Image (cartoon, rainbow, N blue to C red; front, side, top):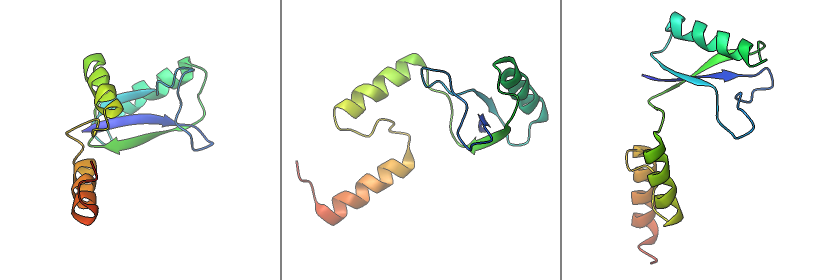
Amino acid sequence: MGLYFWRLPTGHLFADGEGNMLNIPSMRNDISKISELRKSAEHYGQPEGSPWFYAGIKRATEDEYEEQMNRMKSGLIPNVNDMGAVYDAQQTLKRHGDQG
């Protein structure tokens, strides 16, 4: 599972003026989801481009987003399920200790 995004010919991901990226939850190579994404891109005036898959991520609900923003503003890892960020934080603590 993951998300398909619409990548423009410039290499940037298609987003509206508020930074919301056009995406659809999907399994890799799900032709029906790719077709839906393509139709949406055309509807919003961006027919040129291609689907781009990012594995292992999901959309955040409004509540999850608010919680992640609050965690980030407090200096914490925004998403505790981001194993890469947790691992990096552990390695930093091992190398430099707790500076707090």
